[in-house]
Length: 418
Image (cartoon, rainbow, N blue to C red; front, side):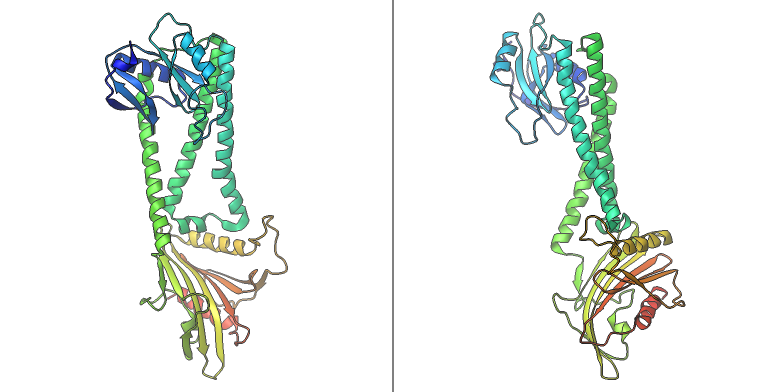
């Protein structure tokens, strides 16, 4: 039958077999041809196979493994070399399209010889594909497991990135990463079993019952697509918010009372004046599943005290109202641990010269309190009261009178209890 006589109308079908189920795919494509659906040279896209609708005619399909790796944008291996095409056509096999690590051929001659007549050679070709899959698994495992773990050891922690990026985004990303790793393992195991069976039995089952696992594979594929769509929607939403700085508000436009103390509360009897040096004072507010209210506060101010002296400094605040007290304590430990590590030193050495703990009053009335001089030589205090946590860094300029820590730390501790 001449391929030019087919009806060129295209029909899309969800692929019911796993990508590396060689026997299932060969059997499914052959069955589709008997229904008048013949695989198009457009091949496959996003889990769909593209067919040309025509007269029912039995084509026999075969998968042949690529001998070398092919990148995502590498088109040099889309078609077999001229010699391979010539040999396959001599035996009655016509090349159709490449799918991943396999070339797909077909023939309508029942008396033609197989593409792969030597089981050992065929098994070696499958082993090459399996080896590339293992390499992909190791690379993926590093980036989705080892690299985040190294970030945790470097002080980034788990709760802080999750609350900052969004619990939904991180959970969807983690689920997608686990899915990818499991999918790679399934492919590797499947090819390994197929290769071993080929060496023992000497042949593959080209008439496999693909319907048996079709429903399960459809559910898995649809679930994967939904998960990818959800993750990308969250990603685009958060990326858009970051670009537009939707959550950032200058303090001159901020008309609410923050749930924590600020410079104005430290010197209530004096004269307060905003004194931004490098950028406008601002607050960033957002919500998350683990912490329903979060804020970052940046404030440069000049305060004239009743005695005529002045205080000039910068205030940095990280504030969270978490869903449970243990989350607040966990955040406090992560903030503390991060400041004990030099974030510019990838070897994670302790900074004995810069980091030092500072004494605090015993009667602050909070569940947890610690103070220290961080690696920037800023006095820093972390306070926790039930599910609320505040991290305060204050930098008093050299030309101003620095307020004693015992005075201003009580103000922030009291703000946690109101």
